[in-house]
Image 1 (cartoon, rainbow, N blue to C red):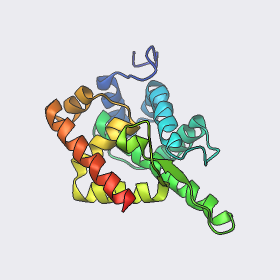
Image 2 (tube, rainbow, N blue to C red):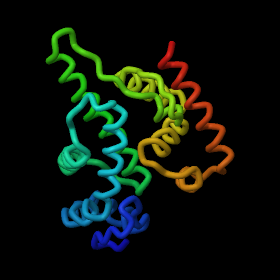
Image 3 (cartoon, rainbow, N blue to C red):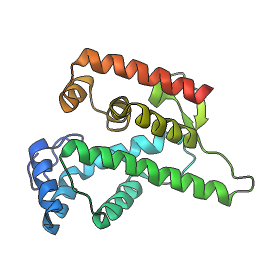
Length: 196
């Protein structure tokens, strides 16, 4: 993939180009923001699809709509971008916030404040999933982030960004066995929080 947005593989991007564009954007280069959007849009849209699937069809929002809403919010945000890892972390958290806000808004519109359900398959990585409240999952992820930011980041990089264990190990700077251990712990902790 090149800096001009030739996507080639829709789920990957050029790490160095993303970081360069993020730094230029932080420095006030509005064209860098446009080039960055072109470069990462396919991956951001794929991430949006993963987030939306957690809501088990309860929201009518499409991945393109969520990705576009995210970019509209990011354009106005004053963020001192550090690197590609920081960008995708912000993307993941912001998307989750947009969906939770949408779920809360729609829940309050319904009589009785209907609940939005999310499967735990993203947490358990298993075909047989237990239903849970998307808002409870959001709160559990926030608690995990407060307890152990790295474990929370590993969960998000795995299930929301779709990175492999090897990619996560490279991004975070630890070994693959460490990723495996922390991922097992984080999944068990989240499952316990959501079934308690």
